Image (cartoon, each protein chain N blue to C red):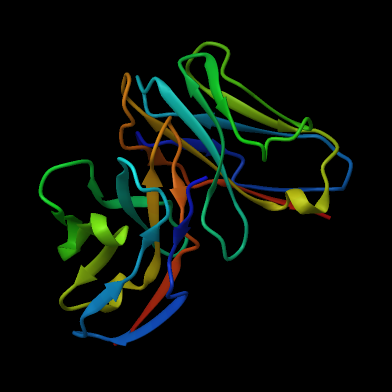
Length: 112
Length: 115
């Protein structure tokens, strides 16, 4: 069965710092990859997705992620975080069928 | 608001009671999903509908859980004889597509507390 690992459970950054959140998955075949964000009190929102093509994917709010097939990774990055990026971030993988397997999430706190 | 709507937002119930949650997907979305999220964890897949047909079910969906989508529009998730371990956020998501997986949009969830 697919598993998704997010190694950083809590991250604290100051505004303007760079962000990289790790995501690794276990399945070696064709996958679709996603990053979702959940702001406090709000629903999960899609930040970006990878289905095929350019492994460097750009999403909303200045986020990007890079798919590295050889490392089974899909790390999320942002060059300069803002206080408003404080949220919980989830990596998710679709390998087969119509379900997503989520990682455990990373709570990001950005200090103003 | 034309997003995925879930009702109720919060539910507190006594152990052993039955509860039912409702999900209204985005209009014309033919796919509907239920996930469960416990504190400190990511969402876990429960079940998936394509129109009115329930096509996938997780092993997490015990016999006490049943989901329906009778007319291919809204869906209900019922939990019978609730247990404390059922306390979680129940998330509904919907998408539009045929064949391959397509991006799903999530509702705000129903938070269930079993006391």
